[in-house]
Amino acid sequence: MPRDRILIKDLEVECVVGVNPPERRHEQPLRIDVELGLDLSAAGRSGRISDTCNYDQVADEVIRLFRFRRYRLLEVAAEEVAAMLFGVHPGLDTVGLTIAKPRALPGRAGAAAVKILRRAEDFPRRHELARFGRVEILLETAEAGLYLLHVDPGRSITPHLHRVMHELEWLVAGELSRDGAPLVGLSPVEWPRGQVHAYTNHGARPATLFCCDRPPFIVEDEVLVDAEGREVAP
Image (cartoon, rainbow, N blue to C red; front, top):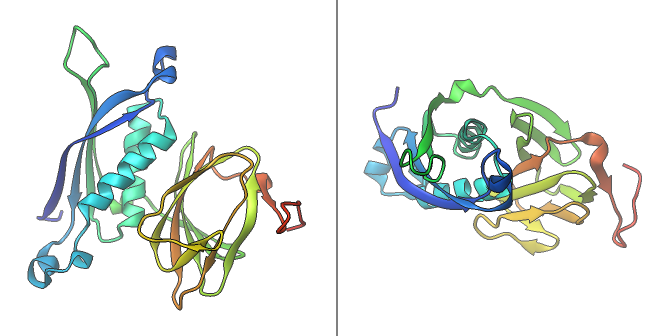
């Protein structure tokens, strides 16, 4: 177990979460504690943020996933968030999460919460070849799939749309353009059904996108299109 920790306390997010009909119609607050286990000695000597885990970025990633996913169970949320963090921050050894719903038990308790601790080895990865490079499967649940899309230099995720799936994507590493515009920072985006999008790697090294598909990726749902938005054969 790592001796060092980065802690994020009482991270706040307003999102749709829960199984009851009123909870599916309205956002409610969550409080989230994140505990990241990793070796901080290199950052302690170098002073470089690249040698540690940027907690500002982690907070953005966790909030983005919660708002996109509209979770029913906190248990699913905790498992997916842990898998995402291990995927986009490969230096992590452990992830601890406490997710609390302050409005879960009004008049009876201050909050209801789920608490987990996961290790990197709890999430074995699978890899699949793709036209643009490689897909790394972080986790697939009954509701969603979490993936890393590794785009080789000079290759593209060609223009496409989905008729069933919704997608959340952000830049993890490398130099990518989205629909011709270079990505800066996280550059998160949600793709609704039917919206055409594409990426190109203009850099000299592989680039990586995080992708969450809701529901999990369906091969038959990916529709390639040309510059005029017309469907083309794969």
